[in-house]
Amino acid sequence: VAINKDSWCDNYQSSAPSVSVTYNKAGLNPIKVASNKSIIGSGSKGVIVGKGLRIAGAENVIIQNIKIENINPKYVWGGDAITLDTTDNVWIDHVTTSKIGRQHLVLGTSASGKVTVSNSEFDGQSDYSATCDGYHYWVNYFAGSSDTITYMNNYIHHFSGRAPKVNGNSFVHAVNNYWSDSTGHGFEVTSGGYVLAEGNVFSNVATVIEAGGDGATLAITSSNAADCSSKMGRSCQANSFSSSGTFTGTDTSVLNKFGSADIPDAVAASSVSSSAAGYGKI
Image 1 (cartoon, rainbow, N blue to C red):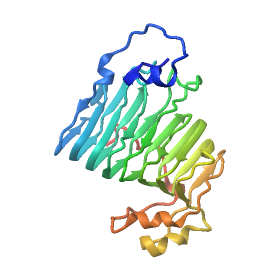
Image 2: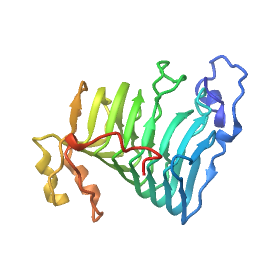
Image 3: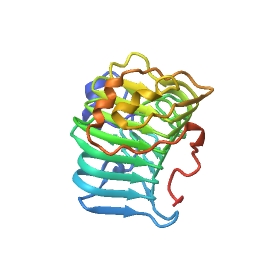
């Protein structure tokens, strides 16, 4: 069931039957976070229920050690956990999102530069899902006009798609993450999306990347790990797969997106674990 947010139902599902539902309006009205602000939880006490965060037109923001949960999970368009749009220097670290109506993390169509998403858990388990199987579909959507995202040491599990979707003009360096348990696809890389994926673990993810996307992807294997050396000053780390499909992508032009940016080190996929991701673990 979808909420008719911004007349979405009228415009895209006009012939669908309508029903009367009750939902929490707070989910559609996120907390706005201004520049030079930090939201840091204490232990495992930092939990936001029913309402997300929106960082727009802001810079120098830290979101750390919190959990965001139960944002109208029954309903599509029920609300996003974290939204970025027109931002710079944002760090999202040791955050857990769970039972979210729409996106767990979304970068809107305007540019969001120098974003780091690290040590976070995107938990897709839900009694309600668009795919009717208890696995969440909208996990991460990176769609900005000039986004640069370091996506590192995260745990993404129980998902059925868009984990993440990358397009617009977004560059994602996905390094040392742990994807687990999917009934759909992980990556969806379409026009304007650029992804370098290295040192990641995929466990029980049958479709690691959706076929047919026209974005640019470089997925590291043992045979192409040395291709990174000329641009990154080091070899890349190969991805690892267990009961999972293949991850195709050999477009080395992705490496040009680094420019002069600092590049994080990567460890071998054999050293990657999901146990340290999420709130309450720092």
